[in-house]
Image (cartoon, helix red, strand yellow):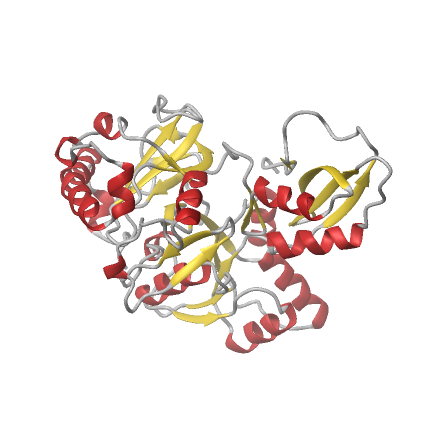
Length: 417
């Protein structure tokens, strides 16, 4: 059985770098011609000169807040999409909101490579519990699994009992979904006497795979690996399996992506090993995003993976450069919390606190009342759900008790355990 998805994974780093920057100028020239938003963003820049990392670093970093503003001014895509690539494809709306096109490639989210590195093979059956609703997560994994030759059960999210029944009948060997929902399924199966012991592998994303949770899965006979993916790029980086089934250190950057780590708030690359904001350039003709700041923190790891793949390695997700926070696989933005407050004049200040409740994410909105007001926690909770699309509790805090540290969203999850 082949050890690698394709030969490109074993190219020398110099060969990969030379290939990417040989293709980049022509890609930029074509994209500027066909995508008006990118043409405006890179106005005055000669694509023929962007032939190295130093030249790329001279281009502006496009951050999601700016992209959202452009889309709001000229909906839905802010002129950042090649419309010729939409016919016969899909479009998605992620929280923010941010609109994204799918593109016409067979595996447009580039997830098949990540699956192969995790040990998933043609003929496997995957239970795909990523969301197929509005956002691209379910389709990123679905398309990659089918491109690899797997059979996919399009489970989506929620309906735990039905998902357990389906898994007991279909007996999938592979789980795809957020890190914690597999535990929900396993625990529910144990409670109801359903046999879903067919699971042996998992590929998870949309949240942190805590070491304790990975170890629990291993104790149940399931080896779980994680990939780092976004709606704009699909799978950016992924874990690979060592010979003993443990994950190799770091996550490997996917082919056809140029990844930089920059000092937060700037476009300046930082030295290898230093933590900064992850910035990505993709040679995607449908959605030509150049130096998009993800808002996520990471660092480049020195050396190459023990698995033999030669791509850059990241240390993994290390927090947020901004306050946008991923909860249960969905981003929550400070602007959404501001919208909740705007709906309720009886609320003076609010702070969303995200924690781990066992193996699951949980969020609580702490609110201070305006003088003399009595906020309705139930009504605020309803607004929180409507605006963020996530359930959360509301806590009525004493006036003046919320920290004066500028945080609208406080991520208090412990990523070391």
